[in-house]
Image (tube, rainbow, N blue to C red; front, side):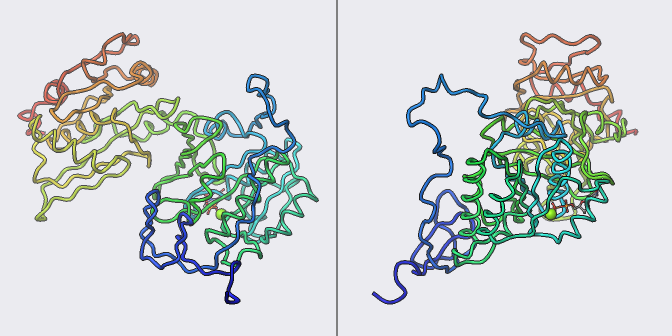
Length: 468
Ligand code: TYD
Ligand code: MG
């Protein structure tokens, strides 16, 4: 065997999921990873973490589930109710949370705000800053109006010394900004690579479980929205939360797509202000405040995100196309869902959208993925096409089927109650949703079986609208 033996064998690795191959390939063949980037030649590293980080070595080998107390996972309440909601009721001791987001979205700001409040509550906080200098963090803290008492900065990116310092300092909570800057000298590839991130993730996770101290990791995401490089990390940590924003919007939406301690359907809503991120406890009202009530091409849907109903405004603009193939743009709604609704509205409800460019947008940078928004999307498009506004007191929800029929959706009562709470007086909904529904006082229901019936009832007639 040559000197390039066992330990330094060269392999080709996917930078997204860590798949390894002895041959070079132009894409990753792993079925669970759709990366189209070529494999990168690296040195194969021996698996060094022999013991799983999740095993609590101090506990007895056979424990009856019934006898395990929940107390061993107390939750730390964070300053923001929005954050607590997304985490499932607070930060669990010994859990590892990956906070992922695009550069500039506010990850470092959020981490520093959490650090600040934890320190104020008398906890030992350590903030490992590999991304920025300590002066930069000082500037940010000044901006947040925070003197920095009780928050200790650790300017260390080398994993070995960092873990030694953790043992020395014994923090109650650790922030790492960001995981991509950490590296271990024992791993041959550069910082941010799959093997480095995997090593850092494993060793930090083991430390968190051992010391029952939570860790918050900031992580970058690539343009296509996945956590840069370290898909591997998503499997290791307990919570993966994405902080999202749309261009020019001050709202930030935090949603988790993995949570071992709570529901992934929950969302948190924040606003970026001059003093960092602040909670938006009533997003429906905040969004409605900016609405022009008599706008054409605007419809409201009481959507449900996790346990919380959110009243969202769907806007549509249609205009005769100048191109051989009409353009369709979807912001905040699923693109293929929008195409389907436009096709059904055209074929089954007489809304002639074929020669039209269509832009659909959800106001405030929000996203709505549930089929309950179908009806509002169709209403907004039809309203724009016929140049007829919708009654400002009306909300609509319901799924649209391919034959133009309206289908019921879950949680109808909560949607209605939210609309009533915000002062709306009418709700367009599928006939099938009426079962067992108790309309709140002052709320008039406008049920229909098909999209065609509903549009006739709700939209001003085209003849009248023409004169507008
Ligand atoms: P930052 O937390 O640095 O983002 P990330 O760590 O995700 O890259 O936030 C950067 C943006 O937030 C920056 O454009 C400035 C803005 N910002 C405010 O608007 N108000 C504030 O109080 C702070 C601290 C930042
Ligand atoms: Mg940052």
